[in-house]
Image (cartoon, rainbow, N blue to C red; front, side, top):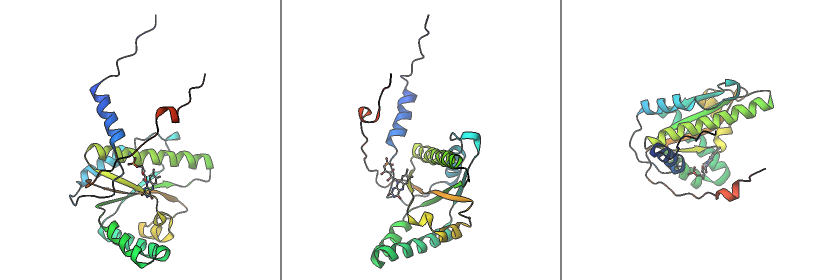
Length: 194
Ligand SMILES: Cc1cc2nc3c(=O)[nH]c(=O)nc-3n(C[C@H](O)[C@H](O)[C@H](O)COP(=O)(O)O)c2cc1C
């Protein structure tokens, strides 16, 4: 006789779904400070992401005001070179409004499969970080702009790109504005195979 699966229709599951579906990339933040303890908890939780061979390839850099200032300088320089001084100055103002700055890196590997799997694990960790904060009312934005691949960014972080690369610069803070998003339906993304 087949056993009936346990009921999954629980309030807890619906609330969990709300967190997963409701998380949005946040561009505009309030000035309210995010407690550092919460951010540290989010990082501690992030590293429970699945990770083939448990290589723990991630590293986290929590940036303070001096380092952020150097990032603002570098990004203004990069944007100015590409799109002119007005856009450079505009980006500087926009970026200086981001309350919290976290950089997540992944260890490099000579083994292409290991590298791919480690990157996957780091991405899962970033998502864990974002979801933990989202549940606490804090939004994030994951960015992979030009700055994250620039040698001068490595210098600012004190890292060696031969040993680790940037998975994302993740801003965090209490949302001022939460945008809406769309996703395709199940029929568009799912094929059932016999
Ligand atoms: C690996 C990765 C890199 C991203 N880089 C950028 C970026 O450089 N600039 C940006 O505006 N958004 C970036 N995003 C955020 C996406 O634009 C965002 O997730 C997408 O618009 C969907 O919005 P949602 O996160 O609210 O669902 C990135 C997301 C991921 C996963």
